[in-house]
Image 1: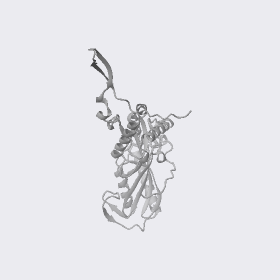
Image 2: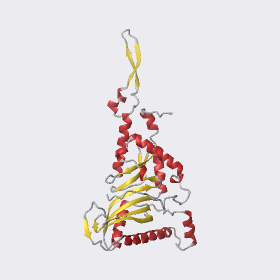
Image 3: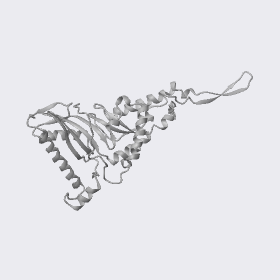
Image 4: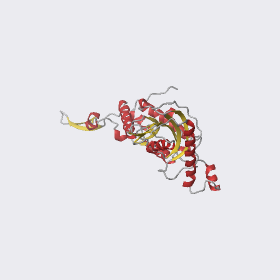
Amino acid sequence: MSLVKIKDAPTVWKYLNGVVNLYKPAGLTVQQVRRTIIGNLCRDLNQLTVRPPLQRIAIESGSDSAYHVRTIEDLSDNVLVVGPRYQTDDIRIRMSANHGRLTSGVLVVGINDGLTQAYRVQQNRPLRVYRVTGFLGKATETHFGDSRIIGKATVKHIGSEKIERLLASLQASHQKKMFELCGVDVQSQAAYDLAVKGTIRPSDTSQPMIYGIRLVEFRRPFFIIEMHAINETEAYVGNLIHEIGLNLKSVAHCVGIRCIRHGHFELKDSLLRKDWNLQCILDSMAQANQLFKRHPEMLQQTSSELVDLAHTDLDQPNEFK
């Protein structure tokens, strides 16, 4: 059976409900992304066949002293008077993660009736995976590359082995902190019982937690780490890179943060900015619905376990952007 291309805007509007996986470029805020998506959707919907203006009843007197009743176009409902049929206020959008301006990568967005799904994804706090690029030898005011340099230090003594040992120590300290937040001793039976149930999520959404961190590439003065975390923020990641530099007896700042996975939403399926249009967004919604069917725990957790995420091997290009 051949597919039929729908050009009727009201029909398309009925299906514009769901979750999409977008690629957020660095340099854009989530509010700018929101305005761009809404503007593109309104533009594409209004280019389709919209409903005709409403009709009104007109009663006119004829030449034979009789009244004639007919329907005419209601000019108060004409698009030249009221504007385009689909306005920016008609479309609702919710982000499942509040990425900062300098963060790029996967951004899960709910549209219209998909706001409920986006909210559930956010409340279930699925693991997010980042590739973070740091620069050794220079410290900045905000710990990011777009800020003023306030300090410099030598980096000749730093090797990949030192960074790997430091990251392993950092991961161990966060794993210990998970059990402390639960109020149990890491050496106790209660801690073991918690561990066998799966990944422990902190009940406090303001508490950042790192579940895994490793060195991906070291090319002095640049280094890239892969971080699996929950409740993290852009400011927290920048401060983490700064602390790594200090523990290496030097200084460092963050030059790039890329989210490569949000739960089961992957970078390879994200819509680039050039694809933020009606057709591609509808296709992404259908793909997200299939993903929710395969992984219903993303919308409603039945345990503390995060399935098949801790040891996922993602092959991404090495870029220092």
